[in-house]
Each structure stands twice: as C-alpha cells, then as structure tokens.
Image 1 (cartoon, rainbow, N blue to C red):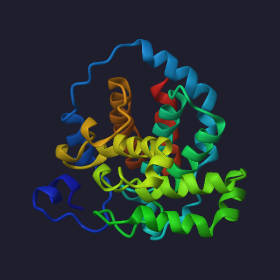
Image 2: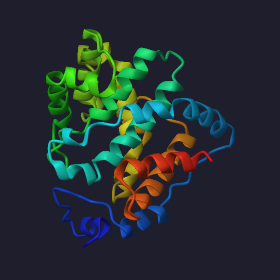
Image 3: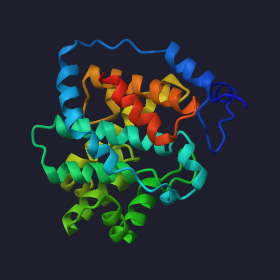
Image 4: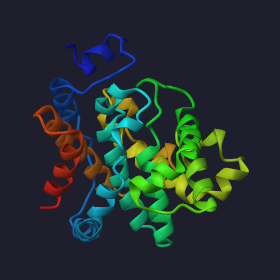
Length: 251
C-alpha cells in the first residue's frame, strides 16, 4: 500500500484514506514546538479520571456511518473518539459549563462526521450529518441513554451544520450567534485532531478557530494521534486504540 504521505506528495490523495506506519512516522518527525508546563497535566488528569465514562457513553454505533468502510478511515471512529475527548476537555475547562452543554457537546462530537461520503473536502457533510441526526433522535437517545429537548436538538443540529464551514461563512448567521458556544467547541475540537493529516499546512492553527486551546491541549492532541494510530496499526480495535492511548497518556 502506498502511504498517505507519499500520495499527497504526488497530489493523488484518494477518496478514502487509511493511516499507515510511514505516515505516522512522518507525523512524529515533524512534531511542532509546544511551549508547555506541567501544572495543567494534573488538572486535566483529574478531569479525565472523573469523566472517562462520558467518552465511552457516547461512542457511536458503527452502523451509523454513511459508508461502512469509513469507520476505519482518517475521518472514522478513531477521529470521532479523539474529537469527543477534545470536546470533553474544552467543555470542562469552560467556566460557564453545564451538564446540558456537556451532553450536547458529546452528542455533536460523536455524530459530526458520520455521514461523510469521502475523506476529501466533502462539502456540507456537516449539514448532511445534522439532517440525519434530526431523523434519528429516538435511536440516538436510546443508544446514549439520554433525553434531548427541542432546544438541545436545535443546538446540536446547528453546531454540526456549521462545524465544517469557515467562520467567515457563518459569523453573520443568526443561528451561529444563538448556538455559538457549542459550535465553537466543536470546531476547535475537530481542528485539534488535524495533526493526523499528511501535510503540515493542514494542521491546527489558532487563526482558524474562535476557542483557542492551550499549548498543552495542542501537545496532547498531537500525542494522542501518534499513540492511537500506532495502537490501531498494531492490531487494536478503533475504540480500544483511542481509549488505551488516553489512559496511557495520564498514567
């Protein structure tokens, strides 16, 4: 199999993209310089120790993917679980956090890329996922053992619809202003996982998000990509690849 890093060099990225060892090694070799301290690690460890069950609770049903093989791709289950993890952090670190915001953040993160057709731009896949969500409310509530109010549904719907659009396309939208908090969390959480992509120019940049994560969160996002993708290539399942990487990170 030709690696993703080799394919992008040749300008030949396919519609469906799957991680490989050469690309993981290339990502490692190009680690950004993160200006971090140690103090935040312990605060985050406490948060995660008390909330790891939230990540496990919101793992989506693999049959929900529009294209079944996408569950193993670079926008598949591992990506989704890492975005859930980043959304959890960003929500818990938010001074105005609430149980409702946390629940809606977990749902939106879990569902945001399930209806992708491919691993390229796939314009408006967020809207596609949001419309699917509205049709599957009962199924989703049963899967996650939650209740979604009409306001919850609107907040999740619009945050998913906006997550793949540039800010200049949404800042004047009244629905963005109404659901800005969750939209901003989802967009940043999604962007934090861009370290998996085979081009440095596609990696996370502060200028493209509204919620700016700490250097420690960026470093952790980078390390989580390396660890979880290595786990998967070594034979672990999508879910265990990420959960084991999270648990190892805080040992």
